[in-house]
Length: 147
Image (cartoon, rainbow, N blue to C red):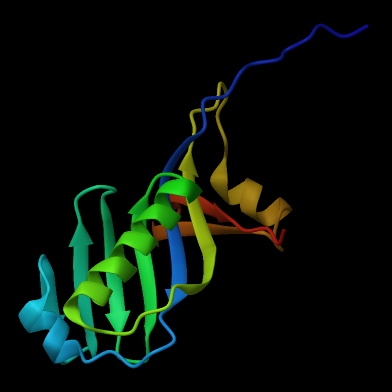
């Protein structure tokens, strides 16, 4: 019988990215003038809006698509998205909160052992990708999975 090497991992979610639609056209210039905590970026065709609680940043496009980043849980992401929709309603748009979905979750953890990133990504090629600034100097690995 082998000895048990069970170690509890503390996985910390650092960012949840979500997207939703308003089902109406949004005038970015109006949002830039009348909204609070906004940055109008006409060269990029979007408005950035920040909420303090929950702490999220939203990219708003005139088509009605909104991407929210910065939440630390799915519930916080949904609450922030709904609050953002409410802010747009108060400006005067006929916003309907629809098609909400979480599209990315970023989490970190410390492992009780070392990982050789280059060998790890070579052995797990379909799902792993190395982030290398220079040849041989790697800062991390991206793992992707389809759920």
